[in-house]
Structure formats: C-alpha cells, structure tokens
Length: 466
Ligand code: SAH
Image 1: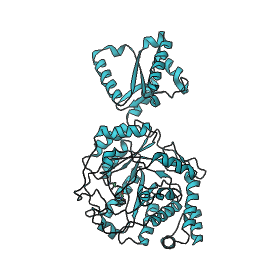
Image 2: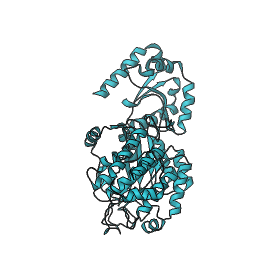
Image 3: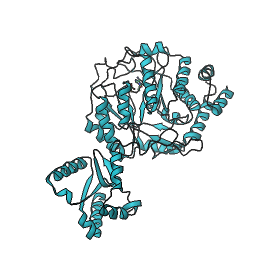
C-alpha cells in the first residue's frame, strides 16, 4: 500500500479501488498523513489562511436530517442579521486583518441575490475576498452574486451516494446539487465542496467516490468534517463520525488535488481538542474562525458543542508545528511555494462598477490633487499608504489611508452650491458611519499653504493614535 501512496504523491491520481484500499487499511495512516503534509508544504507552503466566518442567518428552508438548524427543529431561536450588522462584523474582520470574509447561512430566501449583492459590494470596497455559503440558488442568482464581486462559494455535495443523499435531504435533489456546483464553476467562482464523514449507512466506497468527484469537478476548496450527532434531529440515535477516517479522506484529497485550499474544520476540533492540528498536519492549510456575535453563535448550532477558535492558542499551536498565519487572500495556487503554478488572482478583487469610474477619475487629476499626491505617494508621508480616487460604498474619495481610516478631500469652488453641500453632507455622514474621519481642504490652501495642510493631517493622525 505504501506504493499506492507514493504513486499518488507523484501522479496525483488513484483509482476508486486504490482509494478504498487505503481507506480500509489503518496500518499506514501515519505515512499517509506525512505524505499529504509534504504535498501541502510543497504546493501551498507553510502559511495558514484564516477566513472570517459570519453566520448571518439560521433560518432555513431545508430539512437536512443531520443539521441542528433544519426547518423542522422548532427548538431553535431563529435570527437574521440586518445588513448593517453584517457589515459591522465584516468591518471588524477587516480591521482585525482577515483577508477573506465568509458569509454563511441557512437557505434563507429573505436574502435575495439582489440584496446579498448590495452587501457583497459594500464588503468588497475593502481589500478582501468574499466567500458565500448560502446553499442552492439558480444560475441567474449565482451570476448576480458573482457580478457583485463574490470570489468564492462553498457548497458541500455532502455525499455522492445518491440514495443516501435522498434520505438525508428530504425534498432536495442530488442532480440539482451537482448542477449548482457546475454552475458556480462555470461562473468563475472559486468553488468549494466536500462531504460529511460518518453519515448512517455511508460506505467507504462512497467516500472514494466523493474524493473522485472533487477531482472531477476540479474543486478549488474541499471541506471535510465528521458527522456530529445533534440531539434534536432524526439522527439523534446515530454515532458520531470517525475523526481519523475524516482526516484520511482529507489527506487523500490533498494527494489528488495538491494545490487546493483545505480547511481544518471546526467539527474536527469539536470531536478532539487536537483534531484541527492533526488535520493541519495531514494536508489542511485553512482555518475559519467564527466572528459572529456571541448571542447569535449559540443559535447557529448545526451540531452541538461547536468550538470556537482561541486566537492566541492557535498562534501558539501553529508556531509549534512550524506554520504561520498568512496575510494574503489565499486564492488557489497563489502561494509562494515552488510547485505552485503562477496564478493571477482577480485583484484588486473586482471592486464592482465604481472601480471603473475611479479609474477614469484618476486620469482627470487637478493640479492641487497632483501636488498633494506627489507628497504622499509611495508611502512618502509618515510611511502611510495613501490611495487616491478610492471607492468606498457608492462614493469615491479623493485620498484615503485605510489603515488610519482617514479620508482627505480637496474642494474646488464647485462645493459651494446648495446641492453640492447637501451631497457632501450625506457623503460625510455615510463615511463617518463606516468609521472614517474626513478632512477637507480648499484648493486654495493646497496652493498657498501646503505645510499648514500637512500639519493639520499630522495633528489628526496623532489624535487618532492616542
Ligand atoms: N446552508 C449552507 C451552509 C450549511 S452549514 C449550505 O447548504 O451549504 C455548512 C456545513 O455544515 C454543511 O455543508 C454540512 O456538511 C455541515 N453540517 C451540518 N450539520 C452537521 C452535523 N450535524 N455535523 C457535522 N457537520 C454538519
């Protein structure tokens, strides 16, 4: 069997019967994990990508037999976050340094594609990737979400055993699940799928089919988790999934799809305190800490005793196993590792329509803007990263220092009219509500007293820093 693992290490292919053989035999588990770990290192490097998870609604039209927030569980206190609450959580995640925001929910049709698109566009004003995990929608809906700027989508196939799929998902169709995944792929989403390991009657053969399905789809991400029995579901008398088997499926997935992103899932840590770390040492390279409000989190109980990521513990644990937390977006194939193919991420990840306007404006620069820009560009002023003509929400600001949440506007005569004043006020209000501080200067001040202008900026920055 060692030969099989060695073959997969080089060729990244295995037949169904070969996968089954490896899954059934536990004598070489350590070798399998070690090999997957090596492949992970060679293809995706030692950096671990963190994705901030926002569970924005636990309302669901589906009745999946294993899931604690299934439609028929009447003992769930249902919630649905408001747009500004979601944006607040996303802002918090951005400020904390996350480069991906994952929006996850039950299949809550209150969130139309159009409404979600508004939320996505707002979040995409920041330099972050957006991942959606909201279940099944039509091609047209997925298209709206993609055009709004969403980068990735997670939709587990859960199981490729069609009969089992039907039993576990009343009223849903396996065909439609697959259709969704292929639609997502064709629309250019980085597409994630995956399985539950330990469903009743699930066979090792069907797990092998699952892995081959990820390969056939050419999934960009694969999330695998053991089933954790929820007492208020029809599966309440079943056993939890086998953690080691789940990690084996993960390791085999890494061997067959060497450059993809694979999370060490919360369900793994829920079954064993070391579960997440073991997964990271058997092929995983992603962790998804939950940033949802505490009061909602306990109601998003897809399974019981869901653990949270303890950030300082995580940092310590990662250090111990020679891994670091990445500051990058972590698109597939976008690591510094030697074996990674050169992949150009959709960067600066499609900031929506505004981005084009911003580009046009950038060309028609006023002499005062140019003067200002020449002083601040390339981090020349206090080593701060100034950006110009930068879209925030529906507005485009003259200059911004994102890390300081500071906006600088240069005004010519045009800002004197009543209408313009009203517009400026609304704009100021909006930007302030997003946490920005706005400084306005007249073109005249730039012309005649540029030192005074920068003194004011320094003072404000100093105050902010206190
Ligand atoms: N409604 C979205 C998000 C589902 S939650 C969607 O359908 O994609 C994300 C994942 O949690 C599911 O895909 C499922 O695999 C997993 N999950 C649900 N209940 C679980 C349980 N009891 N134990 C372990 N994982 C579970």
